[in-house]
Image (tube, rainbow, N blue to C red; front, side):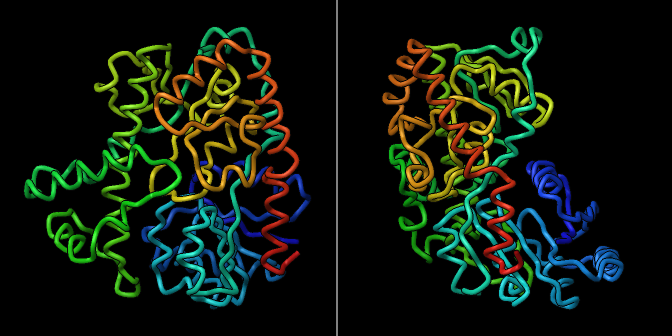
Length: 390
């Protein structure tokens, strides 16, 4: 088995690389950035040369679907495997998604249901995983405990810097801005169902587009205006507001440590610890936190974000917002805890901070579930089997 892995510093690439090596497959790393996800002549030439030099390649692999790689693999007649970890992922609107050489794996079932009809034999639903052996090898030191021990933690963005709605909010008519405010406020009270796209019409989305800092998709893309507005403008705004409101509520009652590069000016009682390196700091933070919070980005409709697998795979105790697919993979209250509202979350934080043994037992069962069924080692073999390669 020979795999050419095209990498460009995605957060999970190192873990997937480790898993492929543990499986004993022949791995060729192609570490090169492209100027465009669609067209970059020099990138195409370089990748084609690698494939010509490795004519026994069984598959090319990327994190997230990249049309430029799909184009090369189609010409070279090599199966192209992509595992999407982002939602939304605009590259899925490219016409290259329909290529027969593709094997596209989507972690969110609703995302899969939307795009699978375009290429039904080549698009699959596959939840994410974690590099469990690498996380298990991280042993805490006395310095780690001094630096990272805390009651409640969150590692990640507030989405303020990613929220394009903030850039255009003042340009919107009062009626549109008021509608968005109400819609975002309502969505924050509902877990397990994202109604943002259903709540707007095509006509409303088209009008909104006139005020947006819209970056047109390429000519060979299908532009779903309504979905783009709902996900990247309204969805990100909802994520931002939800995280700010939730973290403020937590900090009113408990000590909360936040590792982020986002502006925390609106979180006066949250302890901002700055950024956290995903390999040299994050495992220690997770292991040293009594409670690790997961709050899923709202455009992820049903699936589990990578954070959940990393938290559990590292051995952390996790309280997460409800997602439809969580009970399909984990047993609630035995391997992971879910909350349905901010008051519910606060009650559960209080309970599990006072019940150490129960909290540790849940964390252990969650870790063991990921280690046995959802490690990258297991997922890579599942991916190859579903693609008809293994």
